[in-house]
Image (cartoon, rainbow, N blue to C red):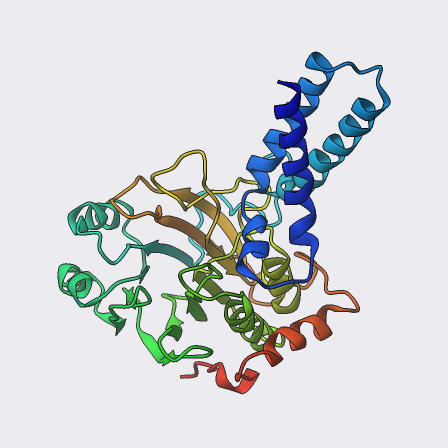
Length: 360
């Protein structure tokens, strides 16, 4: 038993140190994801070391200290995504008549054929805007009934796991489909007219992940996130960015995206809302995101029931409470933010002018 405890303690140390390296290899960046699992393991190991090993020995005391440090370090990253942390975005006023965005985002999983279960979620939640990811021509046909209630749409079916569709009850004043970094990975950028309210910019992203079956490094994903963040840096209009970013909420790159864009995360202080993997309860992370400008307050956020995909759908309800952008919330940019963002963008053939600015 002692040997097992020592080996697992070493695993926690390595798993804590690797993501701190400024490396983009998939096997390094993979350790950004399971911080909750590592935090729980390290915490349990500290208790096991005290109970099962001879704490009078110096090497045991050293191991307890190092393992405890790993646990504290891992909890530091994820504690903002628990109810023990203050809300980054305030709650919306109850029973408000202010303009409200009801947004449903879902990675449907291309080979998943349970479209009826997904349509049931749409009927139950009745979102104003629906964004599907990994939706190919089969899914486009399966969701054809949505054209009645959602007459405004942007459809980009693809059979490579990167198809994307947007359905809206509201008019689309402008829309663009762009392939920002990779020629077969689209993104959607639209300008929506909210009823009795202002116009809303919506950017839908689904960059490819760093993985042994996709990209060997995170360079492509990182560049797409950073170039959109840089584009939004000067935006003072209501804006929302959503999608499966193939990155967790607490990663260095997601935090850098938020610092540069100035967007807020409605999950902070409310929960992780882990959307992947739907079939493995012990290995879940928040891969599907909704970030927004500080014009909004949160009326609700919910992870919906499984519908056959490896992702859960994410439902977010945002209320427009401010006509002017407030710059007093979120993550503050520091002296290195701009240089870090520019360095990640420079790795790919993309620039800020490639990100469209939807206009009426």
